[in-house]
Length: 435
Image (cartoon, rainbow, N blue to C red; front, side):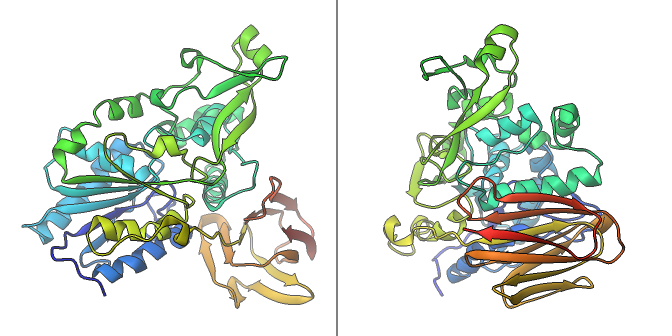
């Protein structure tokens, strides 16, 4: 076990959809990472090498990620900082933040009520200038699918949104845009900021993409604009600011709209997206960089950086020389997600061999898996590390009710890697091909 000479307590702040508990979905119990545990557990395990243990000197600030960042800061982060400060009265606190968790932390440090009790601020894939997927949802009422196939964070967003909107009896789409905005105000605060640059383009007859001035965009993000205008406060208020930035994964960069509709009628109809490998699959590299501070670059995805950033974290704590990023390149595993309602028995076969069963609400498989249950018979099963090939899924519909199911696979490498199933048949069968 590694030991630092002087260990500040650490608060880990997860990102969007990195927490689950009754504050978010009533009846789900105490706070946990929920289905995001595969994202955060590797970092928790690695921090143990530094002598950190959850509940002793390592604390997780779970929160209702549907709310806006200042609400989260006031109602979740500040009380935890106060509690940790009382347990460690003569020490400052370090914050390790993933994704939107970094914006929550910045709200506190840059805010008027800051108590000068934070030493290190470590940001992992924080969208300092926002994320394009947020604008897509805010503008269309729908979730974006990457051209290269779903990654874990996109699946996480689709799964939670699928469940939450059904519990609230809201469907995705423009007709429910106002309800979606009210349900997920945090998404509006992740829209790309002014510093991000142009995000909407249209295609001219010759095939050239031309930008649409930001002043003509339907939505802006005043929250991020104001936060970034005062980013200089971070250097005055904490001992060190460190940003770890992922790259080499296809990441949405800008959106293509119907030029004629926009130029003639100011209608913002999104037709396509353009991706760049200069990002972690969720946050563009330029958006995650915090200008003027310590930035580290790592070949890792938005999910994978929680594991792959650890050598840099050890370097920040002066514990060990960092490895080269080529040696620790992120390897994505394939996960199968089955989200469904009602009391279903499910059998999953591959090559005529049963690999998993869900019978009477109990899961049996030799694979690593996660099984989470929600109100109104909503259930989410994740099977990790599945191989390529054809899978047969057989459903026994016990109550003969309508089946409402979403199937998603991470790592298929193609766009149509999800399927929404609605049927009332008994002994319904379908196939999933994993590439």
